[in-house]
Structure formats: structure tokens, C-alpha cells
Length: 313
Image (cartoon, rainbow, N blue to C red; front, side):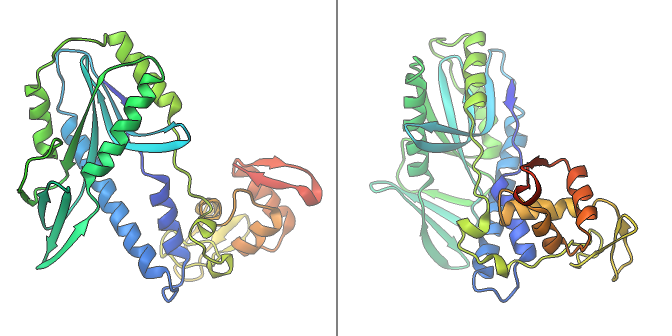
């Protein structure tokens, strides 16, 4: 049973906002653009895994959770997917890697070769081992002693060479459902009710990674962020508020709610709260009372009064 679906990561949404409002010649633009590309590819690989694992419909009880981030002893550990079975829990690490992949052991190395260029990348096995250790401790803290197994899923069919066998299974995501069906369930330690209880506890304990505001996280000056309401039709910045609507002078598109993405951008990039003055400056609107009405209708929560008034989500 699918307990938790996967949603688009906040970090991905934030980086997209940042790249939309950062000048192309900014010294960090290229680095952020590449980070965004990698995160999009990673999320695409995870969605590919979700599509295939959805084919796994066994006759015994199970619980499936995507994108779970838990806290143990002050340390966060994020798992791409977790499958709770009657006799074990499987933690999946999903990778979307291009080119030829060579896996070596002792020490564990992943070597990626694209167009003749070889580079050693961070080992998914090491990442997975860390998460399995914390998963085991997190469960035992709750009185649950169950086998933890790790599995690496490669989202798309690469040229794959495993020079030395590792203790961790490495499969293409389209192979994983068949591997699951062929996996023998040993001693059933977890009943349907216990599986549901563990899954609910994971969902309740899940902590979304919140890197905002990105200007602070990535050490970018707020002055470098380009203000203005972005036209949803032509992407030009600087729509004008007139007669209770936003108007684009380039493509002549008009709508009443074009400021909503701008508010997303503010909370992703600039600060965790916004004042009327900040909104007017960022949106390019002059009228204090019009700004107040817009912020109120946006569903934000008003804290404080007069000069101390701020809006939060």
C-alpha cells in the first residue's frame, strides 16, 4: 500500500525561482544552473522509479513511502523510498546517472565515463549505508528490531560494469519489481497493523528540508535578486497593477493573481516574512492600501500592527 507519495522537492522549486531572478552574468549563475539541472534529473529519476515500483502488488501486506526525511540524535537522513515488508525494511537510493558506470569495491568507487571523460563520483553505496545505520537506530529507539536492506536503483539503462560484487544490490529501476516478487519472505515479524503503525510514525516524523531563504543559504546579496511581477505568458518582469489587475506591457496579458508566484519567490529567496513596504518594492506597486488588500487576499497571516506588521505563511 502506498502510504506517502512523492512531491517536488522544495529545494528544486527554490532553485528555479532563483535562476529566474538572478542576472545571467552573476558569478554564481552557472553553478546554480548546473545544480538545478542535476536536481531536476534526480527528481526525474525518482519519478521513473515510482512508475516501476507501482507494479509491485504482492499478496502479503506492505507499506511504501517516498521521500522520507527523519531525524535521529540531531542528524537528518533522507531516504528516496522506503518499502516495509513483513520480514524486512528496504531503503532505496535512486540515481539518475548518464554514461558508462563502473563499480569497484575495496574501496567502493563509482566511476562515471561520459564522452571519454572519466570521473569518480560520490558512492551511492556509502550514502545508502549511512542512511541504513540511522534507519536502524531510529527504529530501535521505538522498540522495533527488523532487518534493514539497501538497494540502489539506476533510473535509466546505462552501460554498467560491476568489477567486484558489493554487499548492496544495484539494479535498473525497471528490474526492481521483478526482484521484489522473487524475494522470499522469511519469518513474518511485522503484521499489517504493525506495518501501518511504522509507516504512520515515519510520516508523522517526516521533516521537509527547508533551505530558505536561499539568498542566506547560498550567500547571495538580496540586491542581486531581480524584482518585479513576472508575466506568466511571456516571462517578462515588471507587470503593472492597474484597475485591480496585473498588466503586461509586452504581450498585453492581464490577470488578477500574477503576484502569487512573486510571493513564492520572496519566501524562497528573500525572507520568511514580508512587510507591506517590502512587497511594494519587490512587486513594483505604489499604493499602500492596494498592497494591503493584495497581501490579505493571498492567504498570508498578519502578525503585529502598524510598523511592526509582517505577513507570514
